Image 1 (cartoon, rainbow, N blue to C red):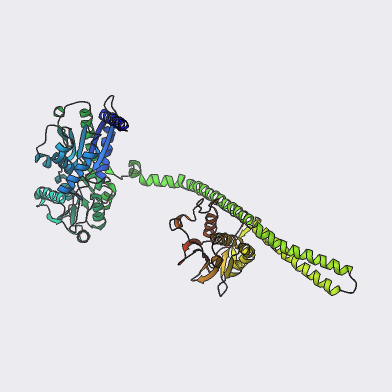
Image 2 (tube, one colour):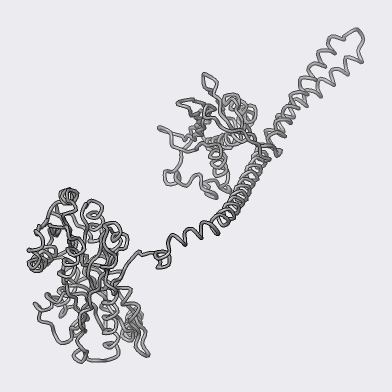
Length: 621
């Protein structure tokens, strides 16, 4: 036994050693983001990084991403918890290079680097130059700085809106928000002679939106975004941008390309995707073996003007004022812009009518073909379902026919005996003939009903009395209920209930539901083998309920009960209830199931009454 344990430990150690060797041979790159996974800036930067990073020769590459989710989670306790998590997670896959995106990620790494990834070079991306100047970075921490230069965007806003006399600055309540506020305050001083500067800092979101809604055309709004409002609600920059743009009656500007599309006019900003590419180039050099100290210091990614063409038009800004190197989003193609009237007239005169006619004809034909195919499949399934039900009722049908046939045979024998006897017994013969005629009609009626339900027929959408249709269910299934020693009780509505639809299809649905109910009570004591079918009329909708006193339906099965091929029966195909739902919905109704109070289940078929003005139609089924 001891030898087996020693051998198992040796095998495990060898496997762990092989895994560590394999991990060591892989060029692992860990990317640590400051905030959430789906932040637009992170998405853009991640795209640029993945487009650029390449595996060094002879080594596979693996990129891993982690997210601090700042500023929603912060503090020393959170730092310690996250450090322990990263230390355990990457113990067997140590990174060769770490990428720190934004200030929070870089600060976290500098605080915990010795205990986490000592000696692993770090590439920072998107960290503000003012933050970098306040840090003492080791030689193996390099990167791509970012400049938050707000002045060009503020100057642009005041130039494009010469009537503006108020510059409204919006910032949030979190620590990063307050840092942005301090930077903005230092950069708006040169503009105080051109406009009155007002700060809406750290307000509740509702109050902020109300204040923005009170602005007029004498104001412009500048914001670097918000991470938190005065009520402590955590926000994303893009969410706040959308909310402010929807509420503000003055144009908005901001220093982030991710504001474009939210309702902002635009602003000067560095491309997050370009920052990702620059960081990727530094990662490639480090993976190739270049010492971090030998890397050429990267210059900040230059700021470019990004504007939303739709907002340019909305606020009446002169198009000629847009710089040539600006990135204009959502602008129509130049041809349409320069020759819009001519192109519209030419297209309208030559192409649109013919194209529209062709498209409409083709669309109409496709729709008709699709509707016809769908209706044909539905009707074929319904017919197949009726045949399957008839097979299930074979015993009851045979019993219903054998009874009158047996009576006819007995009466014929009696008549033969009377004819052989003496005396005038014509009255008895007449009575026997009347019995034979009655039993013949009875057997014929059973066969007629069977043929009517099984044969393909023209589906008719016309008014019919629902109580009568439901009462006929007893003549179809009464014998089956008696054969199963169960009670089938029909409770029609007190007054006539008229619906529009196909009588046979609705009866098919009810027959299916009643058979299911009879099967649900089959193995229960006789006093519980009861199925009740009731009709109610309320507020223009007719409801037919089929209730049993069985064991009910598993709540987990209720949402899937009417799905095709879902069944709780042994050997079932799962099509009966699906076909029932299709037929009911084709009549503009709905069908659902629920558990009863205490025991059993109830299936409801709800149909619109005839007052809705339904249109009659016929389809062969």
